[in-house]
Amino acid sequence: MTTSTTGVFDTSAPWSLSEQVSLRDESFGALAYHHGNRRLVFLKSPELVALVRRLDEFESVDDAVEAVAPAHERGRYTGALRSLHRSGMLRGR
Amino acid sequence: EVEGVEELLVEEV
Image (cartoon, rainbow over all chains, first blue to last red; front, top):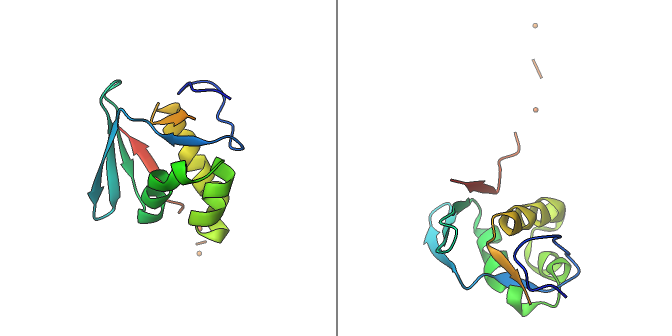
């Protein structure tokens, strides 16, 4: 299991929002700011914000997506999490 | 004479 924020994003593994990231709720979803790499990311759906906030409740990203994301958009939401991982917003547990 | 837009869920600046 990796604790890195870089490398392969294994969706069968548990991930969480990095402790270096602050989320600010907005009407469109939320802003995520990483205090380490100074990246600012727009999360453009409330469902994605809920998914990101609840990642640490699940033993894998796949489980989290299945429980929280709209059923017909699971692939899209997994892709969004992959983008967040690329930006360093997520950390492995 | 016109036929489809998936909005990005994540945008980074």
